[in-house]
Amino acid sequence: MSSQVETGRITTDIPARLDRLPWAGWHWLIVAGLGTVWILDGLEVTIVGSMSDALQKPLGTGLGMTSSDIGMAGAVYVLGSCLGALFFGQLTDRFGRKKLFLVTLGIYLIGTVLTAFSMNPMFYFACRFVTGAGVGGEYAAINSAIDELIPAKYRGRVDLAINGSFWLGAAAGSLLTVALLNPSLVPAWLGWRLAFGLGAILGLGILLVRRNVPESPRWLFIHGREHEGEKVVKQIEEHVEGTTGAPLDPVDETITIRQRKTIGLGTIAKTVFTLYPRRTVLCLALFIGQAFLYNAFFFTYGDSLTKFLGVQQVGWFIAAFAVSNFLGAFLLGPLFDTVGRVRMISGTYILSGALLGVTGFMLGGLNAYTLTLMGAIIFFFASAGASSAYLTASEVFPMETRALCIAFFYAVGTAAGGISGPLFFGHLIDTASKAKDITGIAPGYFVGAALMIVGGVVAALMGVKAEQKSLESIAQPLTAEEATASGSGGDRTAPATA
Image 1 (tube, rainbow, N blue to C red):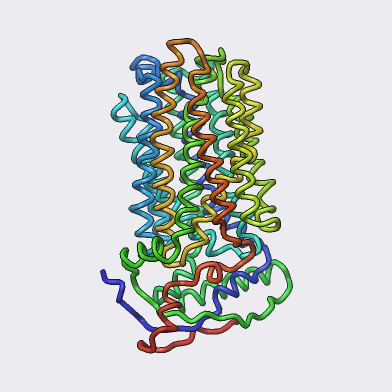
Image 2 (cartoon, rainbow, N blue to C red; image 1 turned 90 degrees about the vertical axis):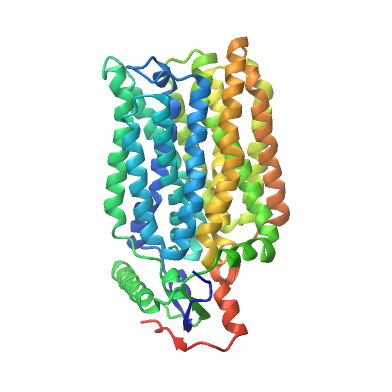
């Protein structure tokens, strides 16, 4: 469809009304309904990392996989996430946030249920691809919806806490496998399959909650459905006033836009690469750095503990590591709204990269406990930085391109770090295992450290001071620019504040 399908011009105060809302119970509904997808992703990744030994057992009990196969499974999962993000990101901008965050969660459920019934490595790889496609699509739909529904004052800390909730899923997944991979409690052939099945049960619960989350009013008014957007905002305002017991302040800030049913890919590409080239470089640097650091390190962390450091049950170690990651995003998150985006993003990237490089030099003298301690310290800062990559991509580009921009940078950055990372680390572990020398994986640490530091430097030079600003002031909607440049089309004014 052409990007020239128009429905008129309107002036609306919907963005200002959403941004002036105080925090209320309704916002917790958004967090519960949308933010919990990261718990699912953390659960998926950690279950696979914790079950590396179980999956390497012979067919009948496991799937007879090698360490390289484990790395390949991680790469296939990430490949599915990248392609899913790109495919569903475009659909999210075209058909709306709500339709797609329901569809993508359904795809995740199908993929993870089928994974539980894997009978050989190839079927397992295919199921991981489908599961990844659902999760990747979720990233685009959910990040855009969250940022468009959460008030500007709280957007940074909420976004970071939600992205950091990945590690709640990681902790839950690691503790879950402690029991499910104990052959005295659950038969070895059944435990790892149950782990995937329980993830599907959690996903089904999230789907039921998510049905109550509305479509983004910002998306509605730009796509010619301003009366639906007005209805949604009125319902939110009534809910907030009922919760707080105080009337809401009136707003006098409006925006005039030319509505479009669809926005062409050519327009979106021109926007990203021509109007905002510095922001494009910034997002690429942030995503590549965090993706390589996390996917390369975490996909093979369980293997490192078992093969080199004599750990039989890695669940407890991964749980401790995961808790530190969540606390980093949760505790440091408010500083991104107060100290500022640029200082916090550059600081967390450079510090975590430097600490990882130091750890690479110390590998030969570390045991399971000290390696986990160093990882917990490093990723306390890295988790806040990594979460800020998603925050940055979701707020520094125009609304019409938001979901696809998130998908694009996630896919490119994750493909560079998340596909090559697990393969690279899987090769390093296989080689180091033959030599029985853990220092053989140090080159991976050094590469990850360098990329994180580069991301931090780019953030310091090109970062956007977006803290506590409306999305429309950070990046004006494309349709708003067009509305001021043209006088054609039917003029309409959206209803004012109730």
